Amino acid sequence: MKTVIEYYSLENWWYTMEHLFTLKRWASLFESRNDFISGLWVTLQVAILGLILALLLGTIFGMFSSAKNTFLRAIARVYVEFFQNTPLLIQVFFYYNGLPYLGIVLNTFTIGIISIGLYHGAYISEVIRTGILSIPKGQSEAASSQGFNYIQMMIYIILPQTLKVILPPLANQALNLVRNTSVMAIIVGGDLMYHADSWATLYDYHIQGYLTAGILFFILCYPLSKLVAYLELRSKYAPAPLRDNKSAKEVA
Image 1 (cartoon, rainbow, N blue to C red):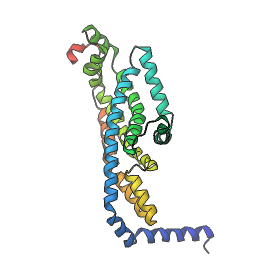
Image 2 (cartoon, rainbow, N blue to C red):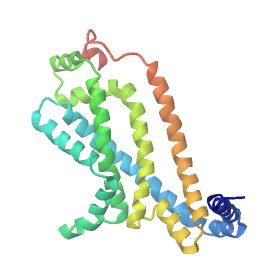
Image 3 (tube, rainbow, N blue to C red):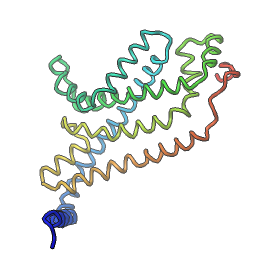
Image 4 (cartoon, helix red, strand yellow):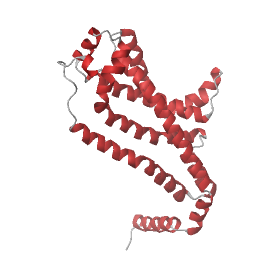
């Protein structure tokens, strides 16, 4: 004799299967495919532009955090600590609901780029800082002796040598960034998750809507996850950073 829990579990399973394989629901989704394609395109745009902004901010603040100047290090620390220790969701709500009170009104697309860029820029900053600190100090000393200023030293000497160290975590941040674009749905961002949720709610076809969104996100993220695994494996066999006995002039 089945228990009440077993009965309802079995009933829910049949209910789920029935709705999952209903052709009418999938036909309706196919008719609305342009909405999902539009959302996917917005998600891609926000992810790419947000990643560019995050890389720019991450590089700048990563350089600040490894500089000798105490003021620059303090600025970088404040930026990193603030954005790493406040939820992305709260940041998005602030840009969407808070900034208008300050007279700043941004469209949801811009908010998506800024929120994603600022949030992941803090994490990329730490990746850049770690990469810079992995380079022997003799490299910077040699660069200074050759007449390089701090910016030139970073661009021509230090940062190129950090690539093998930072590429795996950078790729991992890109993967997380793509997934985090889904927060735009809460501010009617026109992204993939927003269109999936709107369509599912409109027709009450939640299984088809969310499953499709999940599959599309998987298609975007799976290649990135394989790239992360490849870069991590490659980094294990990469040669060590240039040793102190080679001058910055040789590197340049």
